[in-house]
Length: 456
Image (tube, rainbow, N blue to C red; front, top):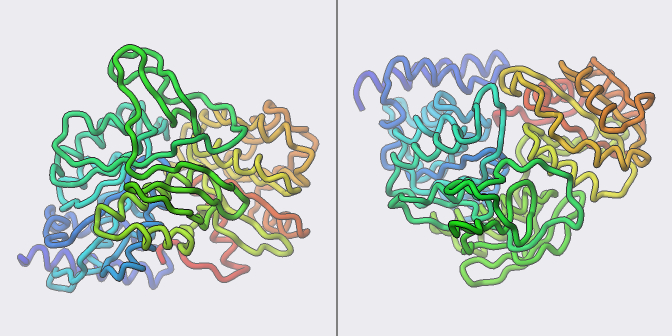
């Protein structure tokens, strides 16, 4: 390693340690400092490391944690950016943390969650062995722009990694198109059957064929634009997945059971997380594991034992109530959370937390595309309807127009008071925060109970 790289590593490690001592995450700034010193630092630090990258709109963190559990059980010597710092600077930080001061990395594998827009640049610097793309949905219009911008960013990134095996969602017509005209080997995953008997109403993000603009026809849908799509004009259609869910046996409040066909072998799979979207994440995990040399049985076993990432169906004991926190970022993801709540018939409290900071998306008009009406139709079973966050008033207004009784909507701006309301009785609670609201609330929760920091 050159002197510039060594100095960059030293600066990154030192600033990270100082920030941690100050109680801050230290996930992005150290990488930013290192990049200023050596623009090629990531390329240098990743030499000889087999890198698995997970990107896409929804499910990056959970899929990464599932794959990580498979890495763990397979005995791989690996590291991962568990903090969710998935921009270029955060990825540089995690590589620097796991190498010596000389810049040498002793790990054989790295598991990297990567922001969709950041993948375009990050892919130039990493020796990617496996690239997982979960799905592509409309997300944070102020940051990503139109959905085609996200698609094109990933597509350009793929041109930088021609030797990587692509692990693609066969049910997403947008994601599937990434396999067009590339030399990469592709492994497909998907769900061969509907997931729910009833689902939230959703405005599809991909109504028309990406090739000829004809409206798609569907043999079935799982959610949003995912499912058995086909174009009646040009013939573009869903690929048959090598890893496919052939039966959804049960979707519960805490977990799911499915039958998974992986490379011709059938497996009964228990997923240690609820939600239809996590069924997709599980299929992606098994497909990715095969690509990096982990046998199917090990990957399947990992799905029953892994622990969710922060805010992703994370559970807390808050006062007398058992609470589950479910991060929401965009209409497609929010509607999947609503599907999960709607399919659980027990009485519960629900809490909506809406912020509009940069990481949440400053344009909150997307909440009008979420099917809150599905929850309003079940409002009799919600013992309390709580609203908080920077844009609590906007959320309360949206719930009013969804059909909730305005007399029952409680706007609680202070998080300490919100936690008191949640913990006042034994009724379980579903908490639905946007990204920075999740961090804000976890910070308040940490004052009352022992929880891991987000970077641990």
